[in-house]
Each structure stands twice: as C-alpha cells, then as structure tokens.
Image (cartoon, rainbow, N blue to C red; front, side):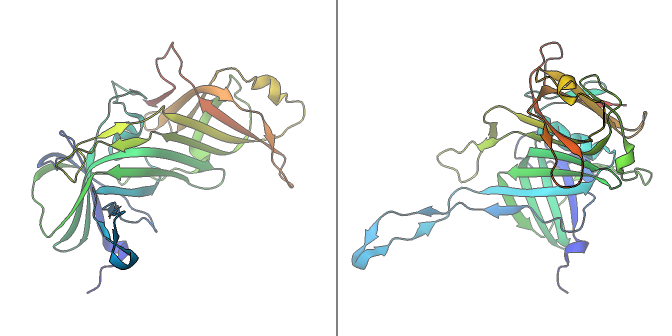
Length: 301
C-alpha cells in the first residue's frame, strides 16, 4: 500500500537534553491540517573548487545535517500549543504567565508515515510563530521549525505520559478574538489581526561531527502585530497611535480557557487600504518594556 499524506501521524516529545530523543516524559499528538507537510532533511552539499583535468569539477560531498519545516494548525487551546509558543518565545510559563526571554527549549518531532516507517527529527526549535485571525473566518497558528538531525527507523520505544487534546478544545473563530485593547482604545472595529514572532537560530557546528550540538539564537527577536481597522468618521487614528511605545493586547478564547497576548511597541505610519474597503492598516513593531521586562507576554485566562 502507498503512504498517503492524510494518514501519517505527528508526535512531539519535549527534550530534557538538546538533540537527545527522550525515552520518558510527556507525549503530545499534533493535530495536522490539510497540506501540512513533513520536516525535511538537508545535508548541505559542500562543493569542491578543485579543477580536475579537462576542466572537470571534483564534485561535492554531503555536509552537516539540518532539518526544517512548518507546522500549521487551526487555533485551539492545548498544552501542545503552549509548548510550541514557549519554544518560539524562548520562555517558560511561570504560574499563568509566559514572557519572551532567553530560556530556550527543544523537542523531538516524530512522523509515523506507516506501520514500521518513522522519521525522527531531534534538536528541534521554533524559529517563527504566527497567529492569524480574520473576521468571519477561523483563527490559525503557523510554526516554522528548525532542527539538527533526522533519522529513519522502523521502530521506536519509550514510556510516555500522553497529553491528549480534549474533544471540547474547539477551533477558534474570529468572533472569539476578544477584548482587543490598542493604545488604550477599546472601541475600534478590527477586520484582521496577525501576530508574528521570529527568532533566528544558527547551528552550532563543530569539527569531528556532521551534526550540530546546539542551536544558538542570533540577533534580536522580532515581534510584529499587524491589524486592519475599519475607518469611521470622527476617529482621530493618528492621535490614538502617536508613534510612541504603547501597549496592545487581545484575548484568544474566553476566561478560564483562553490566552491573552500583550505586546509593547510603536506603530509605524498609518496606511489606508486601497480600493473599496475603507480601513486603516496598523503595524506595531515590538519594543522592550522595562516595567514588564520583555516585549511580549502570554497569559492563561
């Protein structure tokens, strides 16, 4: 029988040691969506600059391994989502609050393609996380993943505590993006909202090994909150969004179940949407807030 893309399963295992596939701990099943692909392996070909007789090249050899891919899903509230967001923000929930920081965490990604056919990608981290919400539509997550190693095997063993996703963990719609507060304004009417968090990571390669022993963050974390607001008479948008650092927040889901995202940052120049839709586009560039100690927080409601 052929391997069919709707049938393969994805499991996430938190790692206690970077790049080491755990044998115990928690196990999270990932709810895939249509078009969600596998993590792919790249050997990074190293080409020779040597010129052989007759102007022939000396070819290329495989270099160090790397793993990359994207995990897309419809937005729900689940421990798995918290784990992936922690990786993206380099933070850990302390009580009910997660702050973007410098506490990195890694995980193993297991794709079970068929019976006795598995791809195991270890040393994985999230390099970019996007939350997208549109009015009258669904809300979605997208996680860009990088890792250091991928093996194919026919068996995998271990003792794990399965952390399941409750059947009641329904997929959020645009009307469940609640209590949007932008620079103190609570009465603006939004059409779209996109929160993107990025953290570039570089492989820590060493001589004597074709597998990196770690992933190091490189450069500043980028945070962008883009919103489209319906233009209404009598509202001075330039006065509300004055270009100084301000606070922006929204809830995804109701109290007792959802998550509150709070971003600190400056709004770039306002842009009118072209054509027939009379809207204003806002782009917030995340900025460090000394009172909170970060540029972004996530709270369990």
